[in-house]
Length: 359
Image (cartoon, rainbow, N blue to C red; front, side, top):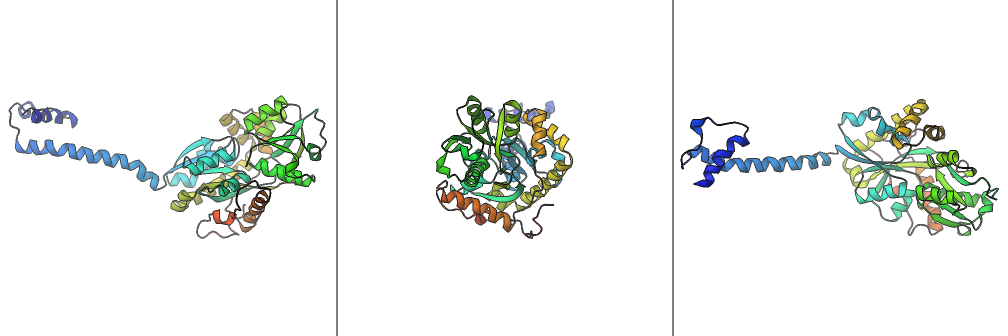
């Protein structure tokens, strides 16, 4: 019986044991107990393989794995480099995968596609995403007074104010916070959106076009704003401060937030702690972000100096501010359908509007 001889020879090796010589299969007929063991062992091993294969999925279903999209600055980037600030997530033994994005729109595309579970963007990206039917929810916000967003022109350009950009080519990322800023800056200057030529580019491409003179102005946020200020002879025609103060948002996959509310709530609270640690340690933050992004330290110091702090769950006031932006985009025909922001807002059980206010 060759097959049984094979099993009898291989089984001791599989169990990392060597059978005594007098127990090895030298005869054609194995003992009945050995035969039963030889038959059952492959079945047991198969069951162990199946259980091991299911273990990671089971851990993910329990929320122990979290994929976070971040950008080149901000509290998420700090948390990535200083995981000890995520004390609540650490107690839950949450394993985090980090994915970097240039801007908010592609980050939310990844969120909707299921490639990440959580991310951070400016005000406009979630409006465009919600209008496109993305299954995302707002889970937290960070006030953004607008100091970190500017409309840049070359130093020798003949533009003294935003009004002078009538008919000119302005570069910015479609569906980004810069998009909202351009809309509001034009309105404040008495111009309509259709009185300029929008040039939709991601930051790296916009930087090249701006440097080459292919566009007349560039609306951009930090650290690209600070980097361009330092590297090129430019003028700031306007900033979003006083023109388009708004909020930045933390967003999650609706499915993840619904299935793991305790992890999302703890992450928002950890982010608030990290935000206030950052406020107290600006030099350390600049060094941390510079090491992460390979952007020079002085640029990151300028970025940190214009940052805002305090992460919280959304309040009725914040929702109303975001709804006003969505209504403006719809009126301009920039989104295909009306958006009701409140329908995409997630709040953990037991959190009131008063408790949601940043420290």
